[in-house]
Image (cartoon, rainbow, N blue to C red; front, side, top):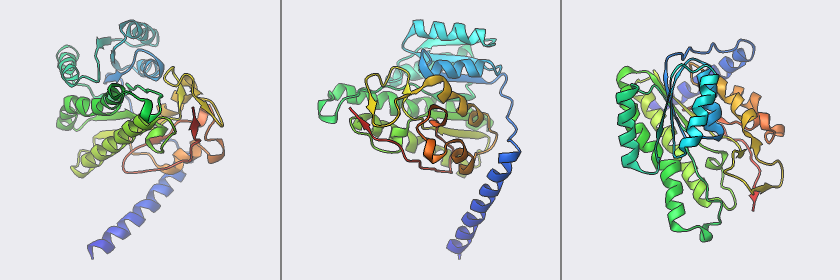
Length: 296
């Protein structure tokens, strides 16, 4: 009987989400106001992290920047202030070091306050075939791309749960959805990041903490310097600026968004174009899109 009821529930929810997504094609979801929220972005010294910092700055948030590149963070802070940020704090933090993550997190909580929007964006790629990759680089890849998410969640999620308010954002990769030639360690780390973030999101739903939202972003390969030298059979790595813009809508969405809208943003026949390279996932909805195979 329970199985039958749960099956009916899933079918009804599927119908509801599809109807809701169709309605939202004509009536956009109202964006939530995040002015005054404390937003921490790791890996914000360049690339996507810098662009997200500028976007969040324009929305009136308090920015906390983490990176191992101090000069890069200074430039990001300058650009964020130009974009309207009232307060920008930046900290040197090696996200591969658990103890350093906890230490800097405590410093942020003392000096700025509780983080209410956490964006795990820091990432690295070795770009070597598996047998050519040194053990140290493989370990570093997993530490930055995966384990850092564990430590930042441990540091900042308790306050979000206590307040039933917050947003966890994981910048993963399309390589976290499908294996890529020459990126075994990177793909493994991103698969793990996707699974971890989705599981934590489901835990929050199961425990009734509906005020803490989760978003997993799996973009196509973006030209931020990480993938210099990569070649594909189809389109090259997408420019960073156009790739970030479609995500804005989902970061500000007050409810778990639906698959139909994501597919409408990224039609299958144009999946490789820069404006359609963003893939966003919010638990418990999962959408898989075809991606090109990289060659090195």
